Image (cartoon, rainbow, N blue to C red; front, side, top):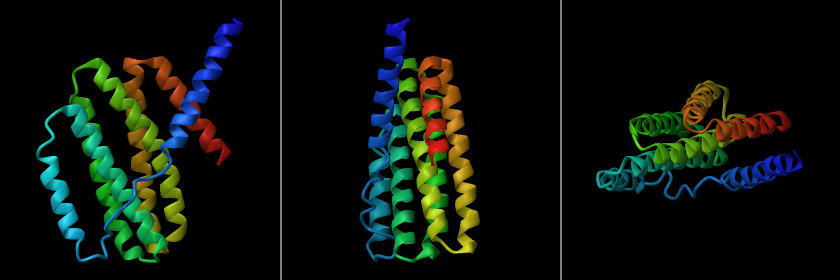
Length: 184
């Protein structure tokens, strides 16, 4: 019995370290207020055309979602909320693409890996969206709240899919999410 308790503690600690490491968003790079932003988005679309593996497509969509979220956060920090609503809608679109691609994956091990990744990251996105929402004007707060709810639904869907593949892992992640939200 003691071994099982120690095993659980070690797994939770590993999960906490993993999720904490993923709290950071990627560098947003060129931002929407730059004249080069259109070129950046065009290059993204071109590079996406050469990704054929479903697992890679899901990861790429999740990366794009996080990039838009990083851009939204950067624009809110710069005091340019006029860009935030569009960026968060694009975040939501990319997140939905990632979730759809995950549903299409047939191999159980690949699906489990990606579903776990989506689950962990969307739980972090909710926290980031909360921070962004605090810094934008009232007119944009409603948009952020809607996108936040979408992230929560995405997280729930990912956890449900993971529970079908690996119920123990889904329970661990869900426990961590609850602990994180309670401590906030």
